[in-house]
Image (cartoon, rainbow, N blue to C red; front, side, top):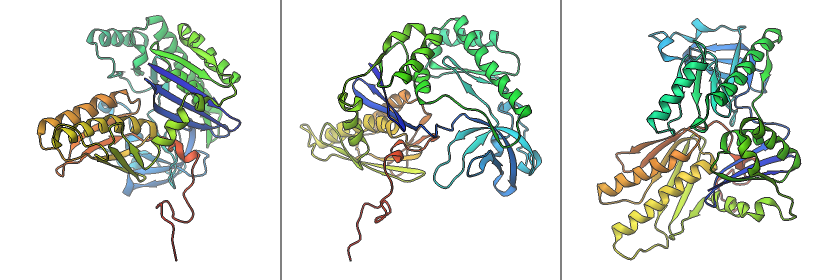
Length: 411
C-alpha cells in the first residue's frame, strides 16, 4: 500500500512516500529555487581541459558546469567513434551548445551536464537523438515488453529515442502516443527558443516537486495522495486529469489543524531515520557514517540475543538490516559507494541469501542502485546514483564548533 503526502509551507515544499506505513522516500524543494535536474541551457564553453577529458561550460549559474567527454559524444554507443576522441577535438573555448543538467551542484562542485537530452513524461522518456528504445527492467513480462517495444517503434521517428517507464505497463497506444507527441513538441519549442537566445540562458525547466511526484509516483496501486495546500492540490488534480483521469479521485485536501506530517507519524519516522544510530525492531542497530562519496554502515546485534544459536541470531539480524539499509538508502537519497559491514556469518548460503535480499529490496528504488557483491574482506559493496543534494541539508547546518565530528572541544 502506497501513500503520498505533500506538505507546503511558505518557503518549502516537502513530499513523503509511505509504503505499508513505513517512510521510504522524502524530498524537499525550496520555493525560491526549484530542482535543477533536467533543466536545459544554452551554454558557452569557457575552458577545455584535455588532461581531464572535460570542459567547463557557462550556463548562467554561480559555478560553471562540468561536461565530460562521454556526455559530449552521441548518446547511442553504436554511433560513437571506436576510439574516444580528445575533448579538444570536440569543443573549444567560445563554442555555444545545448546542455542538460544531470547532477546538481554539490559542495564546491558545479553542476554536471550532458548533451544526451531526455524529457520525462508520465508514461515514457523522450530522447530526441538517442535512436534506441529502452524498457523499464521492472516490467518483467516478456509479452508486455514486446508489445511496448512495438508501440514505441510505431510512434517514433528514425533517430529519436524513447524509454518506456514502469507506469507504461498495460497502457494503450493512444495514451503513449499522446505523451510522446507532447514531449516531442516540448523539444521542438526548446530548439526554437535556442535559436533566438544568447548564451548563457535557460531554455527549459523541469516540473516542480508536486508535479514530479504525481508524474513519477502515483500509480493505480497508490491508495491516496494527501496535500495540505489548495494551490498544489489543484496542480496535482489538473495533471492527473490530463494524463490519468482514473487516479484523480485518489487526491484529497488535508485541512486539519494538526500538522500533516505529525498527524501521520512522518516527522517521527524522519527523526529516527536520520540519526547516526538506527535501531532495528529486533534490538540490533546500524551505525551510519557518510562522506561526500562514500557511506559506511555497520551492523550490530545490539540487544538482540536470539533463541536458537549464534549463527541464526547473526543471520536474522543481517536479514533485517538488509531490508533497513535498502529503505534508508532511498529515504536518505544516498549516492556514491556504499559499504555495509554485516556481522560475520559462517555459512556461504547465509551470505548468498543476504545478497539476494538486498537485490530484491533495491528493485523498489527509482534511482539506479547496484549490489556489487561481497569484497575479499567480507564487506558488502553497493553503488547508487547521486543527482540531488541530501534532503536533510535543507534543515541542518554543520556545527561551527566540531565541524561535523560530533565532538565539542574542551580546554
